[in-house]
Length: 149
Image 1 (spheres, rainbow, N blue to C red):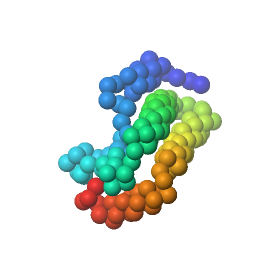
Image 2: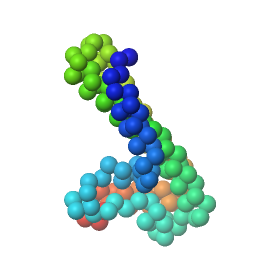
Image 3: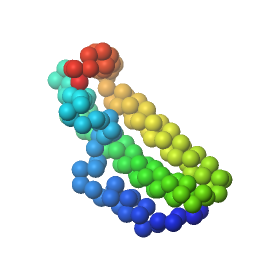
Image 4: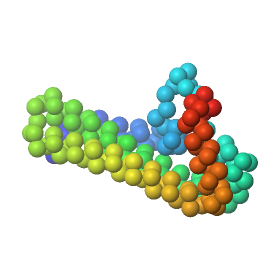
């Protein structure tokens, strides 16, 4: 694979991995600036309503921490692929390499979405049936009332 700026790609990876505060929750990592929208509430904001135990809270936090690590690594990989694609485009690189890069990006994006779904299912399994029903009701009400977010 042709990489004309390996130092730039490595620097991007290092910046994304080692930047303080970069380990944000996946659900709010891509949120617009605070002026554009209200803070999105998470399951932890509804701990009293859901009657989450400390053990459940710890398990959910671990699931989200694991998800965030995976997502952060995949985002770094996407950044590198984007830089490589830009270089290939500027140099009118081989079309097969461009196609492979685009497919790799799509695969990473699909893996990130799948990881989010897996994490959601793991969280659902931590909740009791009553808590899960209540949590789904809360999610529906939050989606229906954007200002409540």
